[in-house]
Length: 90
Image 1 (cartoon, one colour):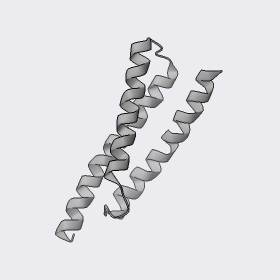
Image 2 (tube, rainbow, N blue to C red):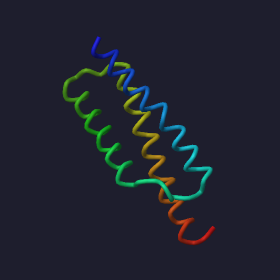
Image 3 (cartoon, one colour):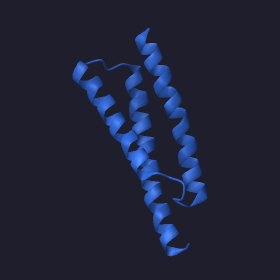
């Protein structure tokens, strides 16, 4: 039962990242984004993944952790692109 709750939590978080990534790409600005927030989320996923690996509890939930960290990494990358666009006035 605990794994089900963890799955729902990770999937709910995961549903938010494509929306955030889409908004980041289309807005072409870093205004309103917090790099610190995104980095803290990224670190949290790293610890979640590490915990799964250390416990040896690699289940289907692990896939969602990986997908989420990939999306957060992409969003961080787009943040830097948008910050450069903000600075150059493009």
